[in-house]
Image (cartoon, rainbow, N blue to C red):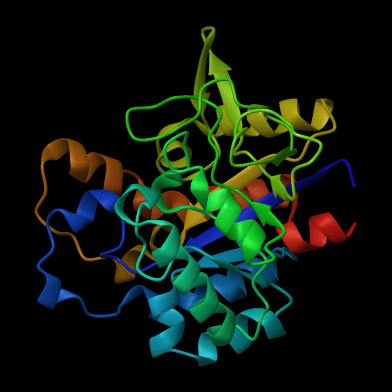
Length: 277
């Protein structure tokens, strides 16, 4: 199993990303990206790859048939909050209610969690307690390097047992298994390289080297990609600042091709299948 890597698809609508939320009127939210699910499932199927779909709950509320499609293709469903809320914007009670609601929506199939915008940090570590109390098995919200938007500096890079009081180091009494996102070093500086914006902006060679470095250490490289990055045709181009526009749209039309190269070269699977093995 050493050469297995982890693929998580953060399945969300075009208006869910943190950056876009500032620009979108509440009444202007129509579902679009969810129409790209079949394309993504076909893509994974063509590459013999299983993935974990970290799904925003309101999509399952509106499109319950999505659950069956994902599971019947051998993929896993996991939780990405009900409305793509950063943990800083909610509290224990809200997350607890959402987890219980999601349990009903998914027939208790969801055992993994990813915090939107990787918003798990020292101030939001209460979420781990909440996951424990809802019988969750794993989390994948930690980026082991600090960026302007997220990250936990010096967190472990290998999977480890996480607790509310220790989010960066293994705790033997932990109940939740943390799968930190893959990072790399460029000119001695640690940077995220596990997908999303970084996958779109970094040369393919650097991404491949990241994965190879993890494999040399017998570690899984945990990778993520957004539903809207794989289906840019469903992603409206909205007016934003140049910086926000760059972060959101840069090289988006090549994401699927780039991801395809990685899936040909390396083996990826879902978190659930990785844990089972």
